[in-house]
Length: 183
Image (spheres, rainbow, N blue to C red):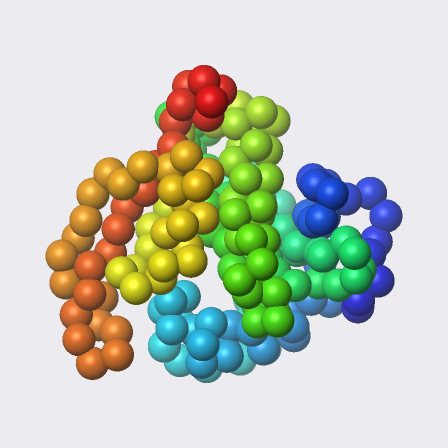
């Protein structure tokens, strides 16, 4: 599984985005069930392989999402996943999601690089007009990625999420194509 397949869908010098293949479901499940990752992904119950397979089946042939496996090119290693979800082709907007599952790659600036590649693809190839993302208060790394990529805070839902024994806010960020192309 750690060998890069030919023809990346999107790539930079460091990362290669490839199709989300069914063979990656077990790795995805392991990451989603990790307590540190789960904290901000809001996965409250363990993910079973059967639910992973159902999710995978549901996205096949969908034109409302684009899902990527993310490979670290210098080591030919699958480290993350990301995507564009809920694509509204009439209004030309969508939500982005991303997560580095392999914790040995946390804190290396790869989250920002992932977000930048997703944004570039969404605006330059899909011709979307607006991207948005949500994050829970306390997820400092995710907030930095979004802000560095040009997203701005649009709103806050107070006490939206129960986390670590207390209610915390959920933040809503967005980036418009004219803002992206202007910078």
